[in-house]
Image 1 (cartoon, helix red, strand yellow):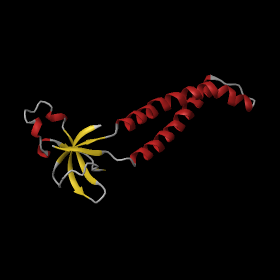
Image 2 (image 1 turned 30 degrees about the vertical axis):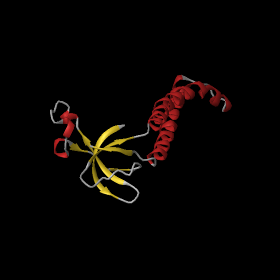
Image 3 (image 1 turned 135 degrees about the vertical axis):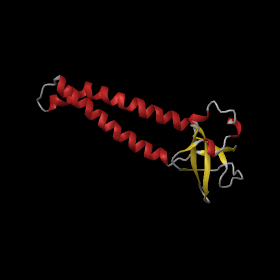
Length: 141
């Protein structure tokens, strides 16, 4: 993630920023010096300032997420549900055999849905953990 944001408030540990959604400004000739009046504001979130840049309220800054975090989240969010759905389909006969039941297509479909539900809970928990890792300010625009 690499986006422009407007500094809303500054705290000792974190900076509250509001992303500037600039899709409407792609063809704008003023894109280098774009201000908040040219863009739609998004939902506020907090970031860190590890470079100790001299920022103040109203500044427009560039906010980045660590690339390794984005890669890990992508793999978990995409491959997790796919793998759990496949596992539900494959292991349905093994699990049902323990209960002296025969696996039908309907029961396999049910296990696929259970796998997807379980993976959704895991993805939500995983994203809660990664939400604690803050994005950081890289430069003042």
